Image (tube, rainbow, N blue to C red; front, side, top):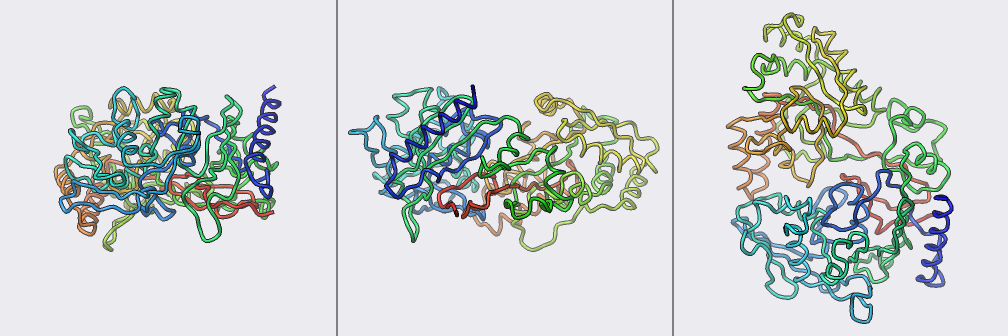
Length: 539
């Protein structure tokens, strides 16, 4: 029954696209991808994860966006200025951006976007009645009295209560997209299923359990040398919940891209060097690019809770950092996907250091053994059994690390827990040794260093790390508008984390995309978001 509904929905969608397009438009120009975990809302206020962020980014625009090099570039804002004291951000908006045509507007024609729309949209994020999971992006940072104001119809001013240099990066988040008040007034809490935006694609329909359909916005404000964007006619987002079935659908030509591959499929598709198996070469393209996510092991650093625990000894923590082979781990357990995290928590794609080298935790069993001697545990003698808590997805990595550390004299026992329960344990300081990950909310090293600021709770400071010098550098960096000076402070913080070793960085993640050969002009993205504005199909 579901297959019949999917076929019927696609047939209707194709018909609608054909009707909306010109005589030369081809109904075949539909980009098809799958979201196995489902989508909960198309409202930017609830774009809390990748599943929601991808379609929201297609339907909506914000003030600024990230390009494929993690550089902040204009979106609806043509330009901006930041005051010398770092408290006032002034944005000049384009005057040629219109909301999608919709019945909520006069004569069904989308109206011009103005500064009041941004004031409404940004204020909505922090409105308690909306209960947006993105409210934190402005908490304790924007002015409490008048954070958003209009200088004129197309000039927006944002005022902060204290300097926060990453603010521009925060404004690239989908939470900050502009929405029309008319649509919120009409749909209320169901706006997430009836979105109206300004983006390259317009919402068409949502069939539960089957697919979401988007169609080309004929009045989109961006163009390139050839034509008004986008080039394709629409997008179909399916909900195949089994990753193996998803890849089979891709192999059979039913999907244009697979964003992530199931671990069980990896051995049949990839070599241990992270290349396509010979039988797949030429059939489709595999593209790897940095993904702003760091996988790590963490240690609880609360002295009162960790009395007598050898993990309180930083020499033991350092020994663990040197005691296993990250490169081999990625090659054999990750099939070449990922970059060994020899340094700190900050992914290699965000490293902004001044040029001074950061120390590295490369595999060195002799050094690890010596550190154990220096810590008072030669060959691990006297060390109790240490439980490493992880989830089933990362059980093989936990077992690999445990095996190599046990060879040095450690006694590591891998404990598997459900992801939600493990996060709860981490938040409540109920585990002294755990596997975690941190994906950047915005493209600034501060987002990773915030994981170690002692005044932050958990999340993000799951280790409860506290270091007065680190805190001083962190607070100083938030007051520093000079990027080069801020880099030096970031580097100094990273060195403290390296020396104190509250975490064991495992690898900096990579986004892996499998793309049909017909798809052209799809840029990489460090958040694994799909930018379909310039995508073309090649027959």
